[in-house]
Length: 149
Image (cartoon, rainbow, N blue to C red; front, side, top):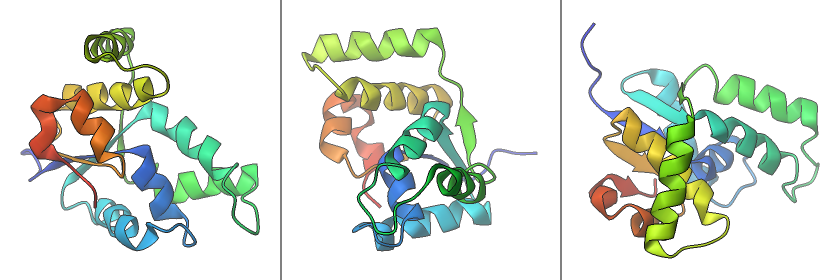
């Protein structure tokens, strides 16, 4: 089987928004998840994003609250069957930390750097995120591939 047309890496911010109708970015993110289900291109996420999506869904300030069993069902229905997970290796963690140190950034941005290392290692042609500024700052070599949906 030949390579699919485009490798699309999707950030946690887009996954969450695309799964929650009440999210302010749902209208922009949901088509990305729908496209992943259509299988026209190869859609990728970091394996780490599964945990991040679960954490965000179960603490999101929506009514009614998303309980843990619902979060698991949302992930199992909307994400797992449609996205190839990129394994996070020790080398990718080390590269993310090195990149943050090189650019002088601290704190939770390291998780964005980790996702970018996953996207880079998978050879992503496009990277969707709602956190474009941090992603572009951490990966100037990938700026032309990074966009909000």
